[in-house]
Structures are given as C-alpha cells and as structure tokens.
Length: 85
Image (cartoon, rainbow, N blue to C red; front, top):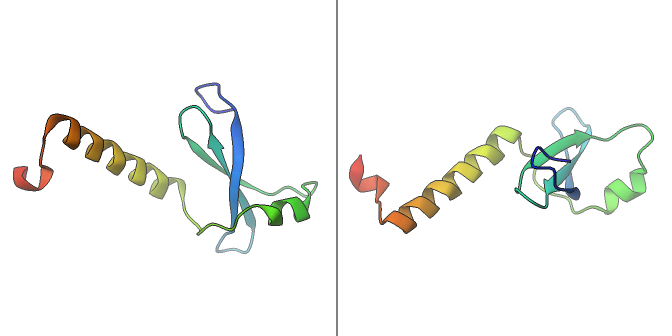
C-alpha cells in the first residue's frame, strides 16, 4: 500500500544498471510509484510478462510529477513561468 492507503499495482519492469530486475508498482489512488527489486521467491516468468519500461529513478518520477503539477497550475492561473524569469 502507498501512504494514501490505496492499492498498489505492478505496471512494468526494468533491468537496473547492476543487472537486477525491478518491478514498478503504481498507486491507484495518488499515482505514487515504488520500485522493488525482485525477490528470490518471485515468479520470474510472471515478472517477465510485465511490460518492459525504460529504467528510471524515483527522483526522475518526482521531477516529472512536479513538472506536470506546475503545468497544471500555469494553465489554471494563466501563469507563464518563462515570462516571469
């Protein structure tokens, strides 16, 4: 579960730079993503059946979410961040 209490669902996998497989879980409530290395008792065939996604870090996901939020605020309030700088 995520901090909002909603269910997390696996949406994909990627192979990290050190060769480990990582499962991406996505919260159905707040869009939070968590990355989990596979465990020895995981069904590897099931892991491989998940869509292969590009490797990413939690920092990259947070940056994308922040950019989306800023774009939403700009649209809502008519702000132009480029003009302000």
